[in-house]
Amino acid sequence: MKLDIFVERSGGPLLAGSLDTQPGVGEGFTYSEQWLSLPSPHPLSLSLPLQEERFSARQVRPYFEGLLPEGRPRAAAARELHLPASSYAKILAALGWECIGART
Image (spheres, helix red, strand yellow):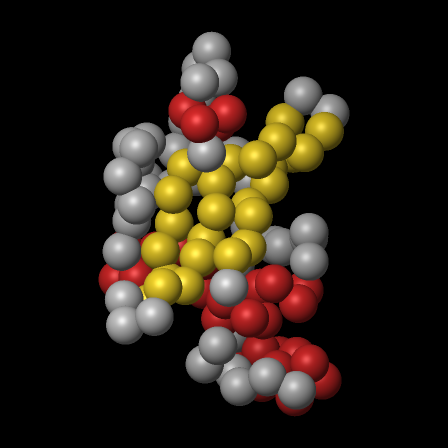
């Protein structure tokens, strides 16, 4: 699975990077070249500083999982989407563009 992450910037969406899943490794995030080459790029989170290397599942999970609701609202969304509540990347992909707290 590969999920492109866009951020609203200068009135339109800009590709910040990609969240992907590699078998045996898990989820990871890599900033896009487009994002890193901006005149003044900034990280999506303090826990995800700007770098060209891929972030590990352990590094990305707190940020991306934090974009989703917790508890009952998350369980209800997962049920509605027919996904396990623990599959944060799949829920994030299904919910689309608007995530509370995704501000840069």
